[in-house]
Each structure stands twice: as C-alpha cells, then as structure tokens.
Length: 543
Image 1 (cartoon, rainbow, N blue to C red):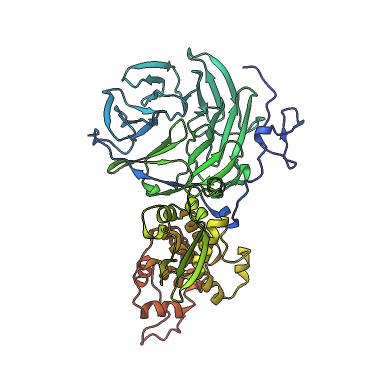
Image 2: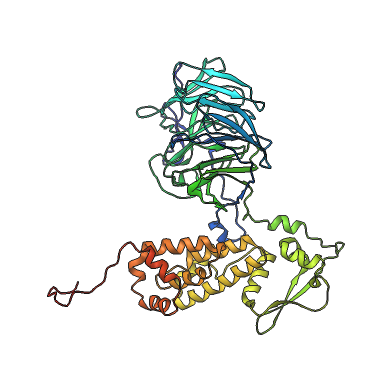
C-alpha cells in the first residue's frame, strides 16, 4: 500500500485541516458547515424533528426459537418491502404487511444494513468470512468469501466491498477480493479514527462509520477520513453542527441521500444532515424507543421502520418532520383572487364575556385542516352570516395567540422568552397557565407545531422549584398524552432538584388536601423516606 499525504479530521484552532507535512489545508467546501437554517419562530430552535409512527398490520409469522444473542436484522428496498431475518430464515413483508417466505434453512447469518442496494446482503455469523447476496425471489449467490473475518462490511453501489479489519484500518476490495484502497489511522498516525460499527456505503460514494462519540466519513477519492459530527474526545447529549454535537455510545449509521441516521445505546435517535452536518435528536411519537430491537430507513429516504420483538411488531413512519414549519408553502396556496369562494371575513365569539374575534378565512383554510373542514364543508359554520360560537370554555387571550400564529407562524408568550427568568413566580405561573390554554386550543384545532412550541416554552422557561409541582399537577390529572414531553421534563426537574422542591411545603400540602393522584406517584417514585424525628426514649438530639 503506497503512502500518501493524508489530511486529518482534527481541526486546529483556526478551523483548518492539517496535512501530513504540517501545512494547513483549508476545509473543503463539503465540510464547511452552513449557517443555521432560519427559524420563523424563536422557540422553534427548541423543536426536535418528530416522526409519527403507526403499527403495520402484518401477517403473523412463526419464528424459530431464539436466544438473546440471536437478534433480528432487516433491510428495506426502494419499493418499501421489508426483509427480516431471525438468523436462520428470511421473510418479506410488503408495505401493506402481507408476508411471504424468501429463504429458509440457511446457515446462521445477519442481514447487513445497507442503504443503496435493492437486494439483501447477509454475512455468515459463525466466522464472518462469507458475504452473500439474496435476491427477492430467494436465489442466493456469494459476493465475497475470504480467509479472514469481514468486520462491519457493506457493499458499495459499484459492487466494491468495504470493511475494517481493525478499528484503525479501513479497506475497500473489488468483487474478486483484490485490495483497491485502504487507509490507516490511530495513535501515532496522521489520521486518528476508531471504527467500532458497521461501515455503511452512502449513495454519494463515500463510506460512513462511527466510533462511540463520532460519525466519520471516508472519502476514498481524496484519501481522507473526516469527522462530520461529534467529538472524538468529548461525550454527551447535545444537538448542534458538526463537532459541536455530542454523543455517548453510537451504533452504526443508516444512510439515505440526504441524512445519516444514528442510534445510541440509550435509544437516543439522531439525524445528521449530510450537507450542513446539523445533528437533530428525533422524537419518535407512538412508540417506546427503549424496546426497539432494530430499525432502518428505505433507500429513497421516505420511510423509517422499527422492529419490536416481544411480541413481534413493525412500526413505520414517514421521515418528513411532522413539526416542520409549513407557513411559506401554506401562504403560497392562498387564493387572493377570490375565485375559490373562500370567506374573507370570519368572526368568532369565545369566552364567558363573548368576545368577538375577526380573522381572514382564506388564511385559516390553508393553515389548518380543522378550519378548512369547518369553512369549506357542509357545516353550518361554512355559511357566511352570524359569528361562529367556539364556547365559553375558550380563553380569549389563548384564541388570540392561536389566530396570531396562523397568520404569522409566530408564538411567544413573552418576548424575548429569556425575559421569563427576570419575572416573579406569580407572573411566570400566569404565563404557564396561559400557555397551557393555548396548547389546549392547538390540540383542539389540530395544530401540532403550535402545541409543541407551547411545550418547548413550558419545559425550557417555566420550570422552577416553586412552580414545578403545581405545573405537573395541572397536566397529570387528567393526563394528556400530547403533553408527555413536558411531563417528562417536570419529572427530570424533580429528580435533579428534589431537595429544593420539598422546601416549599405549601405546594405539597395543597396536593395532599386536594387528594391529587400526583401525591401517590411522588411516593411511588421516592427511593427512600427520611424524617427529621427521634424516638421518645432517645436522648440523641434530632439531626
């Protein structure tokens, strides 16, 4: 293997890449992080991309008995067919959940995660020396068989096989087994990297892999290994751009043309934009992430699948962020000519004081499915004339905030949001109650983005030792699933600040007097009970 002047992935203080001869090389345009995408609402910076999962109704399969070491593995093709293996057989579920056997009675194996090929790649489990191709009709052929284990292999779009014979060495071999490229790193080398996962061939021609805290990209043409996300010497849980992001214990990446998806041991799922290197934690709605056995994304990047094993279930979701702002595209659909017949002036009456509100019906229809159904369907509210009655339980200020959001994509209970830290407790509690009222309306009028903006504000700005119990009590009885993130944030805050929270006895006494169910949950959650008291015959002073 000929030596080359390799560039490292480690940035110097001036943000340049160091070449082997010590000269600085400017970062390539592909590695230069772009400016953070603009947010139409300041609170939107706290939104995590949300994928909404639904269970796929599947035909039942009688899997062979499995041990803990025999994991399910899977691969999805461009037609959204899902191939699943239990190490001894491969079956296929189509996008509607119908099942058919593909291959049975084969030697123990694992499906190699792959995001570029429509066929299934399997690796022999016993010695990891044989890589095979399984076609949709069940025919199997050998891709490569070697005398040494193929560690973390994958098949590139051109048929080359990549793997790492050691954590600090990457190899690329042709289909006939000849070494076509390799790169070495580690302590004392110019390049420092650690390959502890499967290598994954990307649709862009690069090869991606991860260490515990970094995601790397091997650019074979430029003989370069680049750290695109995370930091090799710093762990944590943080979204951000490139080396500003933090991971704890990464598993193998899953590649599409636009994103790299990664999973951590604690079931944090993240998505890395391959153009901007922005790392975003994914919120998986509708599932329990800690019970996921394996996952993947279709090669077209449109669908993500999750597999659960006890019992065996499959969940799927579109990879489009359910909370991404649609304001610009919505406003482009407004018919300003009046040809559609949409109402221009819409009036609402809300609250006990029967306050009157006016809004533009054309904007309401394109921004909300609820109002579109109300104003353009056969409902009596669709007929112009008298104002639409929303009910006495609707808070007027909250409705005003919702209408403002629909017209501007903006929601801020106070501007800037950081001003909350300067307010007194009673003022913050008032803002929290108002925001919960807005969230209630956002749920009613099917506005998930506004609902999550409310949660972001409540979670990041209103949690205090004197307010967390009243806030948690207000959202936990009755429990609202749409506020699950806020409820989790309250419990995390209680766990980290319990000694300070219990100093405010009034909040606890009020919960007891109300016989609030939260009291039972607090007792069940406590790890130990200590009381500042002594026995009557004990002469030792109380602590």
